[in-house]
Image: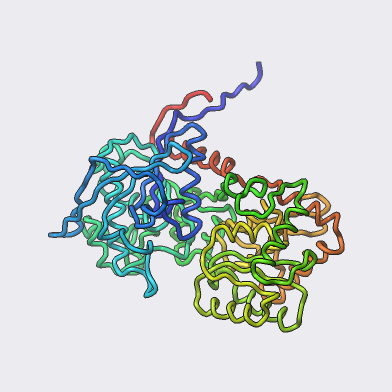
Length: 512
């Protein structure tokens, strides 16, 4: 009969995602999009998924039905300090995925998740140590049969270490496989060593092998060391963070994990980001009628923001944080140059962050109101309209773990111009003679990371846009056809969960 091999998989897995953000309950960035979507996609593959996160003030504003439970707990945060909490419950929209909410108003009933105008909250170490300990206590009280605890970013980084230090303290949870996902290496949750007291552990555990990092407590380092497997949000970023240039001081820690560091590219929610059905657009469109659809959306933006009304002028979109990481040291000088030289481009910008960048954009919009439009702040509907109306999307990040806006741009036929780093390099194929010939090009890479290099890439794109219409049309259609849905990413995660459970001595194999 030849070599017949059964494809095997594990029985249905019980997976709990531990996170501080999940749309639509709490969001500051891409972490929320991942943790609000990945559990639903994994559940759709036949597994039982749940999410556990703090009951922030934003949770109550999300409009979901929140139920109380009869589960409460008290965490001894330090000698003489007992902090109580209770467990609430809701469902992720359009799913059966349960969200368990750690309700503790003293820590979580605040206007923002991590800080205010004065900076990070001073008690963040205490707040998120409590969250980690309360999450484990709550899950033990629920008596869930958990196979995988999937921790996300530094806010949940203590969980693998707490389980490792006290494996019998949380019942069957001690047998769960633990994954630690790094969404951005630059944010590590590093605090004064005195914060270790909030863990409730003996100080003998505070060593350089686990919690301690150059005399301080480092949540992310702790999670990396103690988790069974580490993931990050793109294959290229997984390689980059193992180098001194991008490892933010933890490249050696990651190297010690051997082959247990995996990059899986984030996906996008195509029920939300789909130009054919997007309720925020002036005109819907797909791969077959995109020219008329994009023109209608461009004209709508021009009218709304007082830009010169013309279908021919190239519109360049930018959506995201106004931070140095995103390449604003390249973008601002270039916009200023285009304005001063009277270059025929329009710039449509949405974002907030660095106050100096905000001020410079506001000044440029006032100086050239028919060429530059800047909306300072977050506006979800406008983000969709910019993706639909712009011809190009500029994202010259100095580093980018994955990035989502370039994926939205591809979906909407808005050609992305990016630096060849992290997830940007993984998801956008540079337009060259070779990639045009083999029909793989989807965007443009900067060949020099400078304002001049950004301008050169924009020029290459506009040359095709206005002088090689057939090539441009094929480029747009290919970009729109690319599959960046969560379905593909979710399958990769399930494979990883299977492997982690196997190595932990978990569920038996069954034929698939």
